[in-house]
Structure formats: structure tokens, C-alpha cells
Picture 1 (cartoon, rainbow, N blue to C red):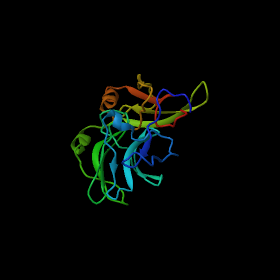
Picture 2: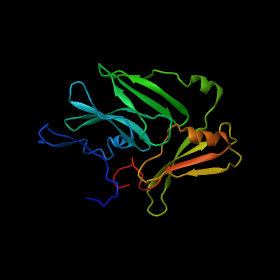
Picture 3: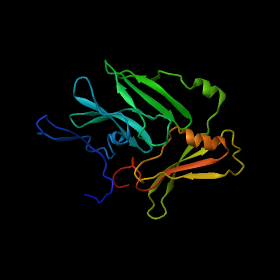
Length: 219
């Protein structure tokens, strides 16, 4: 009922004839399956048909959730990402026969790799495509922070990326990277463009101002 120019995506299921429409995870105040609008992985039902898997973003981290037809949900993986940018949309996942999940994962200073996660177990790296590059190049270090909105004291989430081997006692030129929309969110995700700017000696500041996704409808 709140005025909004970008309503959050929600998940619903119904019978094939259109009856018995039910919202899934109605209490989870996040935009669910939003990646479908930006080229991300499609929703996938579990083999037993009693739950489905979908991505969503929570406080700058791309999560993979399992949404059950009884309305409950579980987070099964986090930090999905391709390394192409700091947005949430480019994470991908797949459901393998037997219930194992495979997905790409990339953090602010960790290049993307593929991970596999059998049911009930922790994920393990499936690839080491970037190990040779990591041995030759050091990525910048990213620091998470929170600050207050000047107008209404709302908590604002951000990240500061510093050049490799930066002297903490010396000032750095700063690039303020503002995402568009404002519907979208930055996060602790590897982004080759920002790493290139850090390698050139710049600190890079990213934050999620009011209107960003992944912080709930009111935000």
C-alpha cells in the first residue's frame, strides 16, 4: 500500500487452472527472483516439486534461497556473482540431479569461480580458473562500512576499495561510484572495472543510497 515507483518482485504459485494462488515467503521483505529481469538464472523447482530455488539480494549480497510451497524459506548460498560488475543480477546457479547446487561466487577481492554444494553440506570450489592470475596480481582490499543519512538518520551501507599495498597514512585520490536506478544495489562483489581503478592508485567508494534494493520496501 506504500507509494513506490519500483515494487519488489514477489513469488507466487498457483494450480494449472489458475486457482489457489499463494504467495511464497510473504514475510521476507526482499525482491525475490529479481535477477530474471536482468539476465540472471531462472527459477528452478526441486525434484520433489515441493520447493523452488530463486536468487535475491540482501544488504548487498546476492543470496540463493529455497522457497517451500508451505510458505517457509531457507537461505542456501550467498555471495553469488560473475565478477562482471558489482550489481546483484549477474549471479547464476543450477540444480543438478540428486539435489546438488552449482553456482558462481565472487567477493570484493576474490575473482569468480564455480562452486558445488551437495544437499546439507558446505560449498566447495569446483574450478580454479583464476588461480594463475591470483598468483601474479593482487586485488585491492574492500572494507564494509555503515553511515547515517543526514536527512532522516537511516543507516546507509557502503564499501571502500583501496589500491593494493596502499599506505594507510597517506591520502588517496577518491572515485565516487554511484549506481543508477536508484533501484539496484552495490555490494561486496568482485568487479574488474573497480579493481582496475584501484590498481591505478585510486580509492573507490560505493554505497547504496535510499531507493536501492536489498534493504526492504520501506528503504
